[in-house]
Image (tube, rainbow, N blue to C red):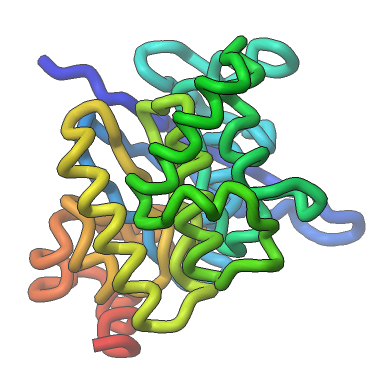
Length: 255
């Protein structure tokens, strides 16, 4: 039986607030993501998506549960061990410039992980240019700074940066929501093209609040509401036959 690239088991995050009841931002969620698959995680603001992602990427410690990446339990990993985790898992953020140091060029940002892994200057430069071109940008974008490019161009460069060390898992956290509709479609087309090129070597966890966008791109979708996964299935099944009242409201708001 195929092992998932990512397995989340009873993942929970409870925040303690002074003078108030404890708050479960994420409440015992379970799911699996398989090689080459694109899994959508949708829900409105406050549903727990970001908290879940922050635990999966080890930016936040869970209260309970387990996270297994490529067969390795990463739930309690920290410090230097995280570098090995991030070699397999990379993230594309909602705001494209968040992926880059504004004082450095796009090329410096894309090549950072390569240099950290011992690549020489000439090889890094050539690989950065190849990655830019793979993501729909010309090689001269390597010399530009984040403030010198458009939001869509910066997000393409951010995807190139995330792919530089050939991760097995790419997490897109609302990666299109800060862009206008036309540019959103271009980024989705790019991600689809990359999926076709990398096949089973690249899996995507696609965090989004727009079920119509998820329908275009994802193989399966999880619907999150108040910290819990209330529904899961293929996008078409969920859109045509929603079982949960929240899912029906979510669909009605965008379709």
